[in-house]
Length: 124
Image (tube, rainbow, N blue to C red; front, side, top):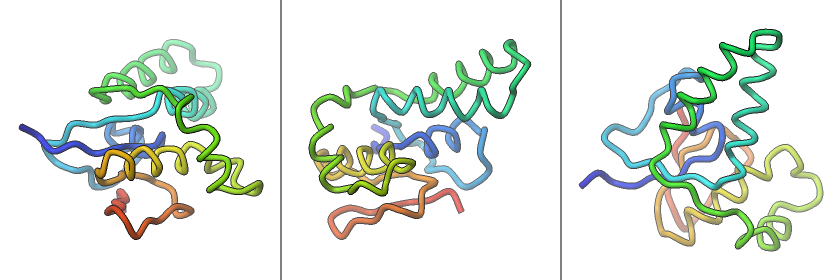
């Protein structure tokens, strides 16, 4: 059975090959449902004006995730831990909280989150 890893949007993009870097091998990737929107925003900005490419790349990225979790269960904790200045990193903070809750490693492209409870892996 493959090991499980929680990804934030940056992790999902790296797993899908959209972002360059080293990806955990033979892992089952888990993510929060709202990471899909962050992935979509990134891909749409990257391929502005090319809806076919946007659709293909979003599909590849979203299909890389084996299981999606609802973010609604950790909204309050995310906002509390991240603080008011973490607007751009909320996806990463919520993924960190999910990873800690599940006692699984986090795969992220964010330098803003860290944990002394779980391992945090980055693509670089």
